[in-house]
Amino acid sequence: MELPASPAWTWVDTPLGEALIVTSRAGVCRTVFAPPQEAWEGSPNQVLPADFARALDEVTGLFGEPPIRDDVALKPVRDQVEQWFSGQRQEFDVAVDLTGVRGFRRDLYRVIQEIPYGETASYGEVAALAGSPLAARAAGTACRDVPVSLFLPVHRVTRANGSTGESPNSPCHRRNLLQHEAAVLGRGASPWN
Image (cartoon, rainbow, N blue to C red; front, top):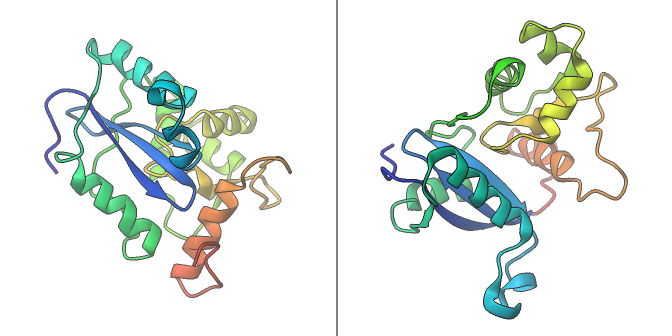
């Protein structure tokens, strides 16, 4: 898939809320989920949610130029996200750009990309496959701080007991994503259908 030569961004409405998708020439480099657009669209000056603004600032720092909004060029990426959430797609055809990610995290994210749709692996398992068998906690932190969620399916990485590790007050995104994948594979009901 050909992406714009300069960093670009768009957003797409998902069952988890608005998703900011930022790309470089090499692939998707940031995704951020925020509350539905109605929650911030009417705010003074239509200020982007802080998480969106922070992601755009990070990309500016990485590539030396601010991403521009380009809904037309990024329509194929948006379409793939919509297809994934509707159950029509299980894999993405767009690359992930890990510019700025080094060492263990880069190795870990590459391992996580290989976890099949609808399956899970524990933090300890992915840490070991990334070459650091004693780094389960570091794997958990890396999954929490992932720059490209959904495209890097960290929701498929669980605690050793199979739980997602989300706090009771979290929005349960990981659990919902896993439940959706199970539903697409015929193993239950989707959380948003």
